[in-house]
Length: 433
Image (cartoon, rainbow, N blue to C red; front, side):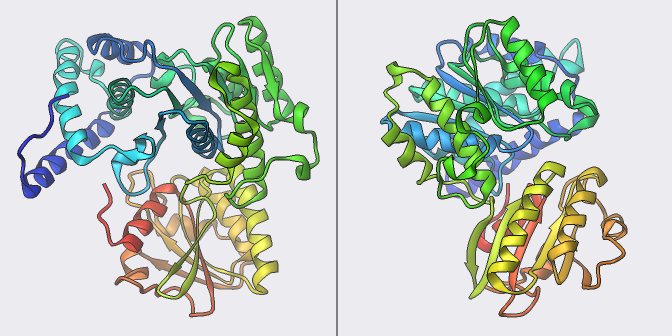
């Protein structure tokens, strides 16, 4: 990677703005499914995935939390770790981290300068062969982990599994956290079919760990694991139905104990060579840094909770958390929400309406975001509280100021992770991107 040497701060800022504009333009291209482009890009880079030791994590929900937990566990065990997740909350570099230090703007500029010629050569004869945004990011992660000589990396799948760009790796352990109905336009509308897509990350002879999921999903994954000679361990079999027997974590919510159990089993499956002790597992699980997951913050003296709940399965988890919050505070919260697509917004708003006393509807700055009118139409008729259209700038106009609700209200920001990122950027006084 060529460093952005001797550049002044304004020059770095300008180069980074141009670089991110180029990267995000690749999202607008669309892309055809398959691993051919990623394999070709990896080959052009000298196959940085070869020799990389990793844990590969897929799932409808929980895969980010489980990845963060595994990274914390491996770091507690003394290893030099890489972490690749998506999407980011505020800064693009969050997606690629080494020992929890994210890619800098200078590194992103330099990596894109290195990767862009290979992507453009591939597209000369066939425009669809140009690397996608996610393929660029995946290549950056693989190169960074190789060049920083990470002992092991935790790599989160972007979408599905079988055809995901990350599926060029050969992991030590594969993990499938949960199976639910999400991204149905790409993965299908049937649980077993979605499970088979995610089970595409299972590799011959490599252990696979599964979290809690519907029986038909588990059956589909077990069938694939058996066919590939991959030994399978499940959270349900090891920990049973009693949540009190599950590991504890500093991340709040019952579902995070399910995720902690999944991460624990994955860490154990690494085997004795990795020297991951039960003490390292316990320490990692109680020192996880994973923002935006029922995260309590203080902002200008206001109590706020930031929680990404962006699909039907996530809405079920949100319901449990909101119920606990009402019991704890004695009143319904003020909720700020927005979502991408009606299939996600409908269960989200149905859940919020059961507990909130006031709802502020926001349109995230994403092409697929629901409009104010679409969100309003999905609020159940029986909701008797106040409904307001808003923007992030209106709700957080100045540092330390939130205009939603009153000083004694708990404000919950939930829904699309992109909305959370916009809010967190305002809270931190930073520019998103």
